[in-house]
Image (cartoon, rainbow, N blue to C red; front, top):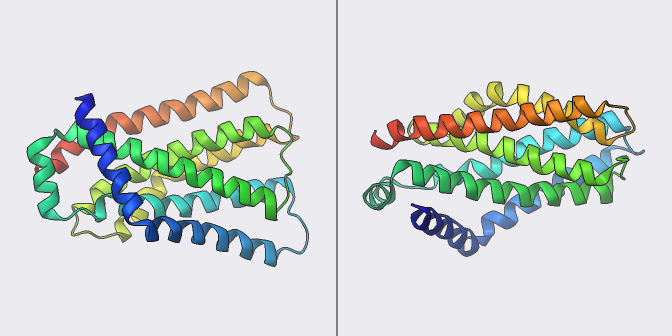
Length: 219
């Protein structure tokens, strides 16, 4: 099982390396969006605005990054994967790949935010950890939504329609959690509770993906 998951993950990584125009296109999207924010704000935004802008941009970056994970797979290729791997192995490999890709994009976004919009974060190490946790959470949700949308005549608009109601509570939770890295005073217990709740939601999404994807796979 682990060998097949690794082989599927390696396949996605090799495809991404061969189709570098899509990867660089996402990087250009991130850089141009943050640069437009920089030009539109004469002064550095205050911490709450900075935090909100960062997570909203992370949301749209994830939609552009993860949306193509299933939509690029044609019917013939999916039939081939059906013959060599189980649906659980396939969805786990997709989840891992999209998490890795989103973590890279999250770190790039964070670096560009620090460069163009200053750094109002008082605890940078904690904020980086929250960004990694948040990137993982958002990518897991939209990977599952992409799998569902791919079965609906490859309609990419469904990803946003299905994903945003699901991701909004998680996004608000991440915004609240990330405030602990700014000057706002938080009790340590509250921070651990919010982080634990985010982790439980991630685990729930993984379980749902493992349970629901085999039914999509058979369709």
